Length: 295
Image (tube, rainbow, N blue to C red; front, side, top):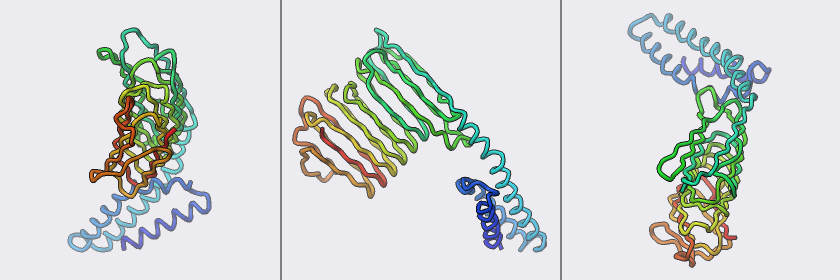
């Protein structure tokens, strides 16, 4: 009974999509109605024990009609609200000066579906723009000792599922930097070759991530947590490289680097590790391709 009604509702929805009554994107939001199956099952159980079966059948039918009405309302109202909000692009300008008391920058970027370009800045602390489709990120700046903490947070609410945008930021190359990147479905192009990067945390969802590391810091610690992503890390051949991996069915490749054999703890390091500049990578990846390339 419940499965038959489910097929009927699904057929009506797909028919509506074919004839232009619904937007195809509505399929992404059908999962929101899964509790209806539990409710309908409970009604049918009541129909077998406590209420007339015809009444239970009637209530289940009304319930599934309500689902159709909910789908229609979502498609014609809430969905278009999201689209309209996404089309109202807001630009956030960031221009933080480098004060004489600032000894370190701690930068956190929490972004949704974005194209992100990061580069170095020779004067100033942080400069650039965040173009977000109707979902304006919040920028906070705090001073803690000699560290300036900057947090760029784009909140993703239940009405903000498609916050596509463009982020272009330049990061100071005058002082040490700790960087946390919490990214969604993102295309990342980051050139850190001139930045004194002490720590980098890259949490990447589905996307393409290109990162170029440098040798200004004597030790750079990198944490990569990749879901279904393509990650390319450019590494100076003059720096030592050490990679410890915890990977599922991901592919880890090395190009133009003299690497030793991987040990029993899944640690592999270059023959030059222990040099003046070293890069230590902790890699966690699901279904991803990760490539380390020497330059």
